[in-house]
Length: 74
Image (cartoon, rainbow, N blue to C red; front, side, top):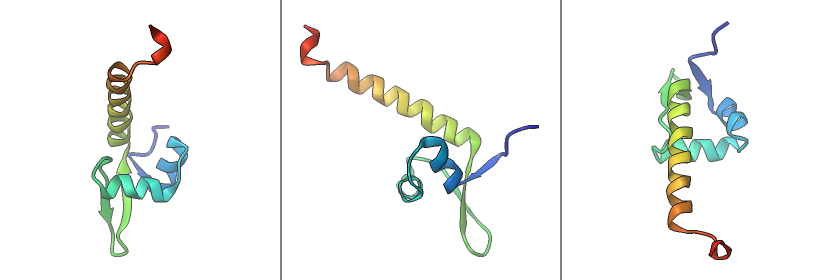
């Protein structure tokens, strides 16, 4: 069975091991792309958008580590 195409903010929070308000903030700041659907305006995040966000987070972390090496590394 294929994974669902769209995830709720609660499902994203569970995957990222963070809170729903934190995921909502990511979506509202457009760091994580989501869509607002239905009359009640429920947010959903497409699975591939979550994977792209995670990949970008790894790239950003790698850049940060390169620019801020441990003082003990020398």
